[in-house]
Length: 172
Image 1 (cartoon, rainbow, N blue to C red):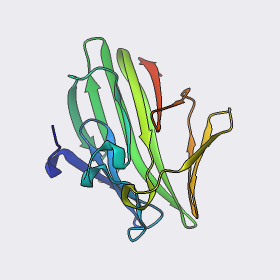
Image 2: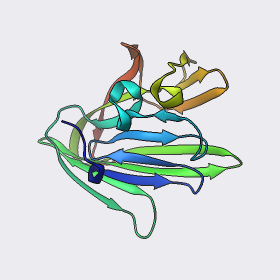
Image 3: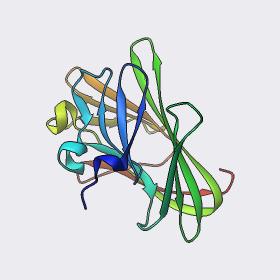
Image 4: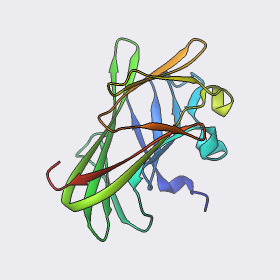
């Protein structure tokens, strides 16, 4: 089912911004600036045009969202049959580099999670070359564009996507 625009929340850093869906998917992001080409453009088409999903492995979770205080720090809470987890999304700015930070915290019980990263530069038209250093860092490169992903989650390539599964427990 397509998402409605009201299903999105904004995170940003005064130089760029991202739209985050209720399902934990970043469906729009231009880096490093607002006027740069989008590397996530699922908003204009579908997941194949680029997105970064972090959410429960099974659909049907109860979702609540809020901004932390008067900030653009977004908290998306997923309550499942086995537990509750929250994804904390925000962006940082440092000397022309834009950072998207996504933290997953276990609040109660255990929640099986999944991630799906589909980077497509230039509004979904360019598939990057992906290089894994084996130590939790991926480089996604296409011409002059490059993204780095740092994560403790074990990832693998699958059907032109980068995917992974993990379980988050209370207190993690």
